[in-house]
Image (cartoon, rainbow, N blue to C red):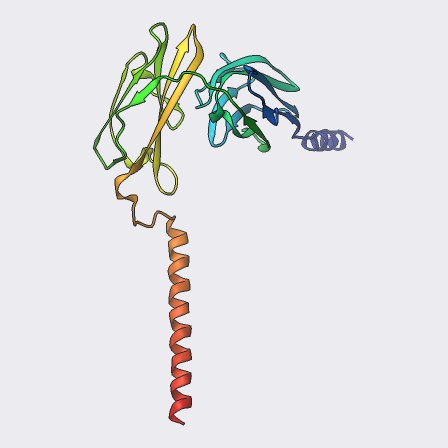
Length: 259
């Protein structure tokens, strides 16, 4: 009887739903509207929630952690304010929007302990007629190789604190500096072709106030095959097979001509 009870209890736990029920994101933000609210509703016991705009994370929520929330600068979104995140929904307010805020928004939830689970939902938002000042970001080169000096310069409002980000990750040792200085490495260039995103963000009273970004490419990426080795091997195999088929066709044609 005890075994049956434990089995039914385990089955009911595993059978619990794990999904995002609603993703509330405005389809269009008209000129003159300074801020919007977005909300992710869920029926799940998760350990991590992330908000993304395109591939860039701009908000993270970890229940039970201290601090439990964290925001990241994203081009086009001047401010990210927490309204409430709890057992059933996570609601944010986005302010100081520019037209660069147009794009695909995504809410992800995951459980990183067994049984591992993941759910995601997307919605598109289009922003019209919004122009806001962005910090001046300049000086970043167009391409870099291994060990090259990477430099960029940022100028924001006098009463803001500048923070630097590479591919969405803050360089905490550069906080407050107007100049980014570091050595280039292939490891920080992502995607195909390999690119790095450098972002300067302004914070005022601990809140994101504005941001700007530039991208640079890996110097040796032009003309090189950056695909994973497995994909390159498959492509080479298909090429060899295609050449073999072509040779066989030519041989058969030659035999017919000789006859």
